[in-house]
Length: 515
Image (cartoon, rainbow, N blue to C red; front, side, top):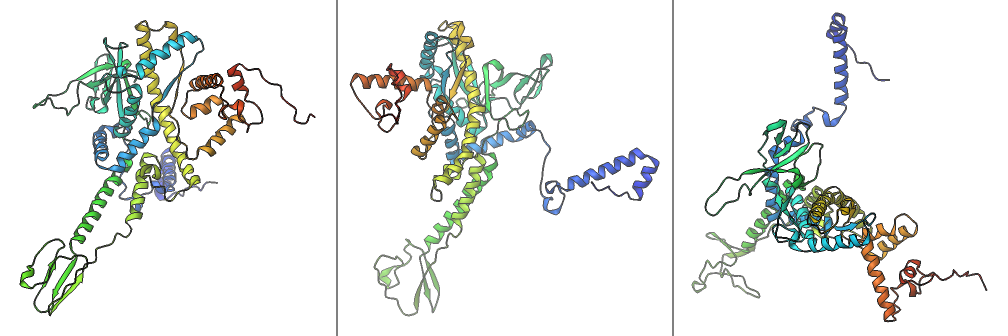
């Protein structure tokens, strides 16, 4: 039973005059007691310096986004670990590319082959890039980098007439989205941070500068002009962390201060050691004065019979009466390694990657602990692939398909085609153990062969085609290799799939107990 709050004299008077008001006072007092039961909501001296703001997701980005983005880029340029974190995420999310898979159902082999051929010509050349620099997979990697470093990136559909298809992709930095444009426009539409909405709150357009706001043209500066681009021609790639969030923030925002302080700490340690190394020997004059000598600087003349102030290997110095020498002791670096590890662990946590991925330091891990650490990181990478990159790829594919149909290079029946995307191959720490585990999952029906192949970064259909071609070559040249399941003596039964691929008849199952 909950404890009934006690009524003081004022409460009793108020309750006598107005029972409803008394009830409200009692209810409010009881709610305050509940709030105080949470340490995080207490108003004790421990929390007096805890400054909080009840702002919306967009209120936070309105004031902080530009600063966060600029500081993130500065750290990428000047902090090796921060730069490494951005590179690690781009490598693991995209790698050598997130590859397309087309469902043949309702399409037909001929039409599918035509579409795949056109996609290969478009995606694996710079024909797809408006700037003419990257392939589709290079654009993917740049998207992943820009999203990680700057928080967001825009993909703009550009209509062209001098390319393989009448469209190309142009990557636009988030800086070009008119961050300061927040106003009402005609027909009940309104703009917030450069994004236009209709009266129902649905996105309808983006207001994008024609060039970077801080771009200079020659020796003069010209104000950029933001233009309205319909939402059909823009893909905004960012990670939504709060409902209603309009803009993306850099991935390492929560660790920026740690990386910055670590830079300052390293600089201070280096300067301390440099200064200490400059002082090697102190010459004491017990009769008149003390002279400080610095290594590498001649302050005396040996012709006058004074002590040499250069220390050399094997040197024997005969001291005059009244002179003595003491050696400087450079300051130590106690705690430097432990402090560095703690800071870098915090930095890795800010990017949701492991300390080992950030630093390359594998001195304190074994196979089991390394794999355990990789689980959380893998979940983060898969979330970025499935919730950020693949949705963007689907929209880019739709643009490609619309352009191909418009150009008459594929039929209209391709409009209903369904596609999926295969993420890059996961790098295996112990291939033998991990492949055996994956094989057991397939053998016991816990996953399909196609899913297992896709998890390794292969397109299952492409792999089957390559396996069939390999077996044809083996048969043509009468090769019996152990990689061919039909001739693997370690297997107790023939691989039925391989027999079907080569057209051989299925041999009868032998009863091992028959005599």
